[in-house]
Length: 159
Image 1: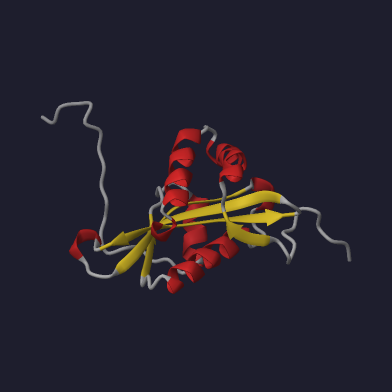
Image 2: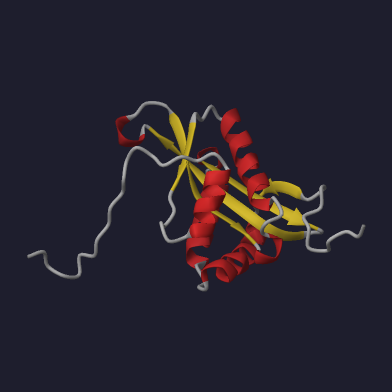
């Protein structure tokens, strides 16, 4: 039996992201989304590094290279509900490493940190058309929330 070169090694390290990870995060996100969101990630990482109590930001490294990341932020008392909660803002895994448990390892790392922070609930959002992400969330134990978020463009007047 031979080792798959693209498999995440069992010793792949999960650690907090640092400013030096920005380029790799942006590159992975661009491979996934088709567009660069450098400013979003730069601002989010800067905020997380400035106030780490309000964020969880982890990366998965394999042979020294960042191959995945996850960002969550603390939300206290959202919609008038008491208690600490968190929102998973974004999770991404390099396409070459998908399907190899990397996303689940990142999510587990986020949840471990959140438990230590006393967080009782983790939420996220996903577009209904993103079937891969819906499958990932379903396989990770997420359920459809009891609230529905609707959106519409304000470019055209309502008649």
